[in-house]
Amino acid sequence: MSRDTRDRILDALEELLLDEGSTKVTLEAVAAKAGVSKGGLLYHFNTKDAMIAAMVRRLGDRSDAQRAQAEQGGTTVAQWYLQPPETISEKEIALFRSTLAVLRSIDGAPGEIQDAVTEVMRLWDEAIRAEITDPVAAEIVRLVGDGIYLNALMNLPDVEPELHQKVVERLLAGDQVK
Image 1 (spheres, rainbow, N blue to C red):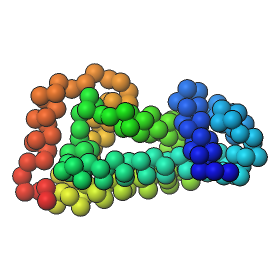
Image 2 (tube, rainbow, N blue to C red):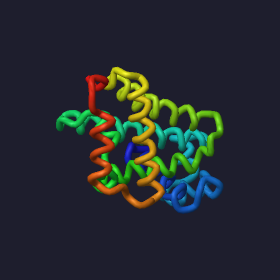
Image 3 (cartoon, helix red, strand yellow):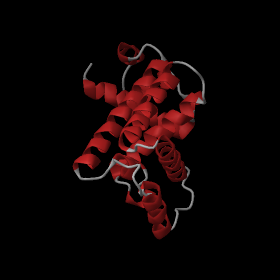
């Protein structure tokens, strides 16, 4: 099976997680939505958890690529992490959808999926801590960014753009940012 088939399976999984929730996602349902046989799906993923963990890792790869692209454009990791929801590109919206699908799938249960989510989030944490010398300031940036992200995922009212900018400026002001 090709890489395209693997991605088609993961895309189908994301859609089912978003539309139906994790309790309705079965290997059979994902295979049907992806247009492959169950055996074809099992060729790539021998369990539902392995499939979801692969989706999380793909999400991490997308996130890393976007972070690198932002840095090449002169945006710091912290600035990218704290960006306002209205500046989010279609690629990032897809990333948010994937994240929401993943978060709906794990419900805090330990195992392969939780490990994959922890790996991906640890990369962000490390990138922020490498950029911000004060560990308390780095943690505040991460927590505020997580709140902005959750706000966008939950489709809650946006913060006024001027206020958002002032929050980011205050968070990133001072000697703690490299």
